[in-house]
Length: 157
Image (cartoon, rainbow, N blue to C red; front, top):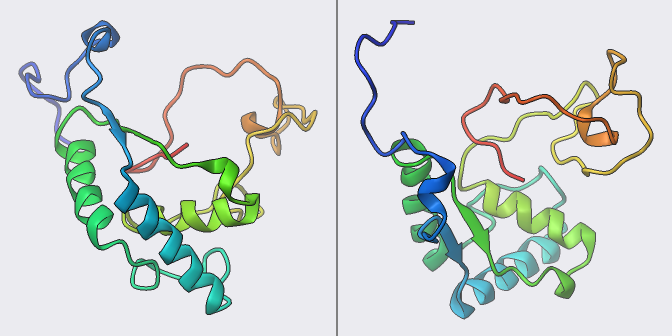
């Protein structure tokens, strides 16, 4: 990997304070996009497809899919983060939310396992796990986590 020899001066350089009065990083789903998500969910449920068993070709989002392409460009070439807001989680079961999350995520690329057990979507919940142990995962404990970054192209929470 080559070392940079001059300062980076593109949109990926920012400070948290740059967004104090700027909500341009927030993408709110509209009614048409929400209807597409509902239809895509119904389609994969009708086919009996489970988590990890379908791709974006099975989870059709004609309008939202085009918007997701712009969001991907923002992640890769712009500021590097986006908040997608407006999905009515109370309308869906936890299993349906996992399918929706997988379906939307399929537009961003290929998912990889989150742990040694091969989980592709993990719940962030204090299970009393000892994070200091080799098998401990921060998202299963109440431990204070040090600043870090995950070795991947996109992280979605």
